[in-house]
Image 1 (cartoon, one colour):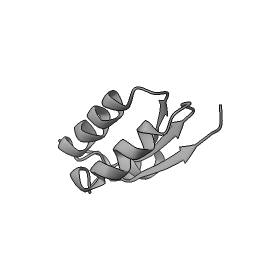
Image 2: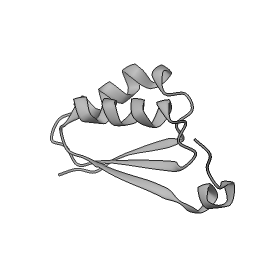
Image 3: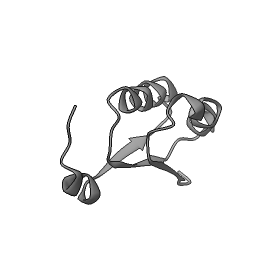
Image 4: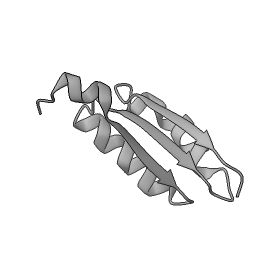
Length: 74
């Protein structure tokens, strides 16, 4: 899939997380599969720590995804 590199520098994807860690992993694996060139912010407002643990345990599976994980206390 071809992307406009200038657009890739300007666009950021914001992904709110809230305890659906299976969907979080699925989302990140999809972004890896399509080689998403956009920066991704993962904003976690979950009560548990599952999303962070899933991301950390599987980060080797999406090395080309430029993401930042941010945890917010509910």
